[in-house]
Image (cartoon, rainbow, N blue to C red; front, side, top):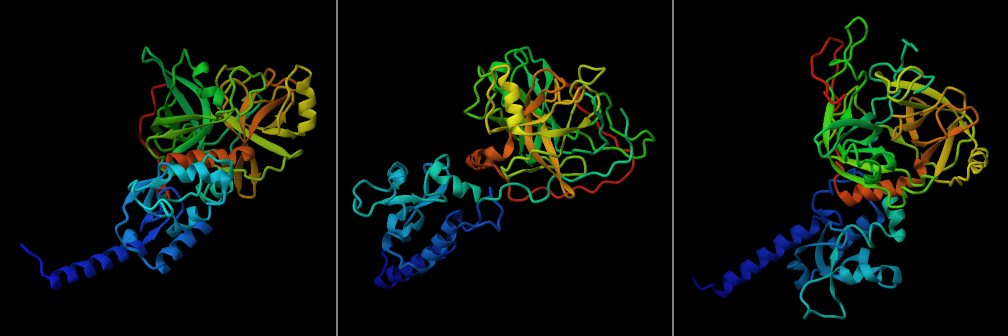
Length: 437
């Protein structure tokens, strides 16, 4: 069927209106909807300026027919002339962004070389670039509600510690390994920092240290007593929810971790879980300390299922208070055995018979912050367990916050909405716990 001039004119008007509607909804996060990996109320200067630009710029024919593309960071963008993409256009004088701009080019080779098209996305450089760290730090990807402090009344007799209450330290996780013979075993501890991510020590998951027990297979959340199917108080009137078990999607070991280094620098790793945690009274993330200012006095807390005075591994989640140790004093002590500490490490403990020990690796070193807890370190190593005068060494979390955020953003798997908190009723519940004990 032939189209008359009248019909052609009408089609073009409709096309322009339709494309303008699309463009007016376009932001640097994609088409219309905010990128799922960040809080919806978080914006950056670049995203705001880009949105305003697209609303005010006179659209060209090329922009009307722009198509979706993939940026060098593997996120979604739109192929447009670089002058219409403020986030990349302002990078033209930046020699450090030259490679990123070259790889960002899109469209046909025959198009104007003086004003090439680029895939305009969220970032103005590689997200792993040092020049982009400040931009990554602006994103608030961690949960707003985290690190709740539980009031406990019951206490009983980690090395030198006490039993934690049911539901206390609800961010604690246990790592399950699976080897070539399909034999599953319990490894280190870890802790929930987001509904789909746990943090642990690099030496717990590095392939050089898991040749026998195999790679990390799953993550267990909500554990308390490893020998009971349902965790309840002595009277059986208050019970925890069934365990949450998630298969491991990806293990990200810090690239600076060296298995042969006696100092165990950069001893930190992130584990992405395939299934998001359901937030409840017994499973909640902990806040991360972001202030790098060292704490030279005060009290920290550690928790886990590690060695006690009587057992190689504790059946029940334990907790222990340990004193902060000034870095220069700790560094001087470890220099005696030829180990030089770095500012990416902190120290705590040093009291006889009180320490994190075998089985506690990967767990958090935490501090109180009003009604919440903050994770300030990751259990790394020490000279024995509970030896007087020898503090334990912990990975200093604040110094790794940019790296942690970069990895989560790069995976593009952060949910902007956490599951609703589950209401808990103080009555006995059923459920089956993991058999991997």
